[in-house]
Length: 435
Ligand SMILES: Cc1cc2nc3c(=O)[nH]c(=O)nc-3n(C[C@H](O)[C@H](O)[C@H](O)COP(=O)(O)OP(=O)(O)OC[C@H]3O[C@@H](n4cnc5c(N)ncnc54)[C@H](O)[C@@H]3O)c2cc1C
Image (cartoon, rainbow, N blue to C red; front, side, top):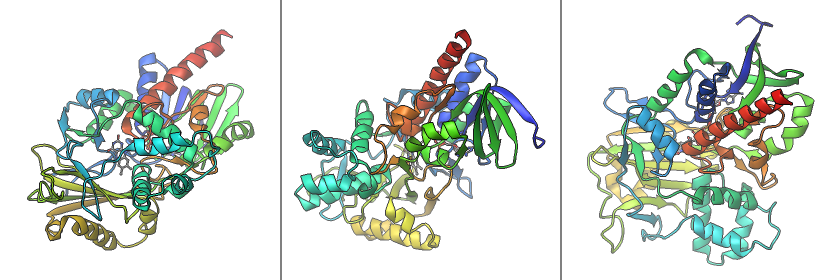
């Protein structure tokens, strides 16, 4: 597009992740004219599949697992021509701890119980680790919980706002069960399916840098100096990515405190492929149960899971979340691989060294993706930021997995949030027409 020429639309959508694509689908169905501005050269955001060099297999570099309760994702997987398949490592098996190799029985309820027990106390600006220090006397349990929180949120508990975590967990646990399913093929098929519904509406390599509110809507400028004008605007980017954009003064006054409440997550994902599933049956002391995964209490934010599709290749996936991921960001890949291999051998023995293929993806320190599974409210942040951002202000609204009322930080949350933003915006656009 030529510099200074402004294109006009009913709606501008910033970001072609699942939230942006779901919002675009809704606008398409509503017959609105719209454009999707995407910073990178591809759609999908934190959903990204990669085929191996010899084309014999694919890896999910970002999101991978779903549960049957994630109904919008299940629908999209089917629309994209795939089916849901079981994962081998299901929660019928055991999560074990790195040190004892004993099964541990741990879920979000341990954290909600802790937070629930102190609900009378004012802890909204307290970091989560202080709350755990005060209320969980057993050091080992505290360590496991801290590691679990860092693994699930990709931010260490000393940086997370306890009230916001309580709010986040309540949204996750309303409906979620184990993430024990996967699509039968690459999730990039879901992205392609959504892309095909939005055909020429997606403009790639257009990072948005400025948003200005005008009398008739919003003018959006990109790094390439392209200008777009829309009567309405959906910011379908993680709150931390939005915080890097310059907003005109009234918008900045309204949104800054909420956008600045978030901090980026950080995660490295590594998948190892084996000829034999040597870890099944043998890893859990005294119990003939396969492992579902490992929580590394001694390595906060690190966890491992059996990611094999039932009847498919034997795979283990190691996630390194939070500070450790940031620490490893600048070291050579071999050092990261060495660190990961040590973690595998530590729990599963020497057999873990004999993998035949391996893939690594890194999401920390990206300006566009929120770093980990999503951005998280930091301990000085406003715990209700998600509630403000998800509701329209004039004819502008935010959408991203962080803001979802169900399944935040998951793909399902992103889709639900995109759909919600589109619905609310269509309502507020028709209200402003009738006023
Ligand atoms: C390693 C990893 C593993 C995961 N595993 C799972 C899993 O197993 N199951 C699950 O359900 N979820 C998982 N997730 C989380 C899931 O991927 C996300 O919750 C979901 O994809 C987020 O979608 P979104 O649309 O909210 O954001 P994103 O996917 O981040 O999309 C945002 C888009 O906005 C674009 N953008 C940002 N800034 C700008 C700008 N200024 N201008 C224009 N465009 C911009 C970005 O480039 C991106 O395309 C995982 C994530 C990661 C990283």
